[in-house]
Image 1 (cartoon, one colour):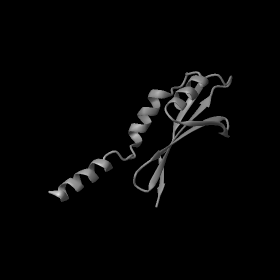
Image 2 (tube, rainbow, N blue to C red):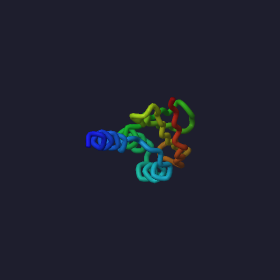
Image 3 (spheres, rainbow, N blue to C red):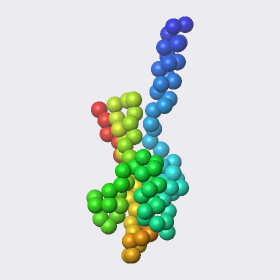
Image 4 (spheres, rainbow, N blue to C red):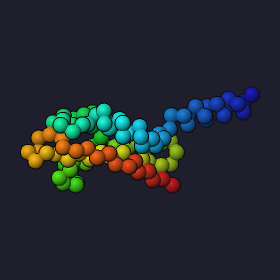
Length: 104
């Protein structure tokens, strides 16, 4: 009986782990940032979702990243780049990057 209780607790704790779902992340990104949106609003929405945005890293794009931790020894980075229109006031294009993970 004790063996089952330990297994259940371990299984329950692992069920909260981050798992990579590129299709889900792409759909999620599309619901937050869209072409035609003001750049200020796009940055604010991503920051509200836990992303850190850097306008200097890959000019002319704004690069926003978010680290996702797991209780297992690995971390994943989610990245969304968006490019401005010529007048630099609205988003012209959104580029959702592949989720990258690294660990032991």
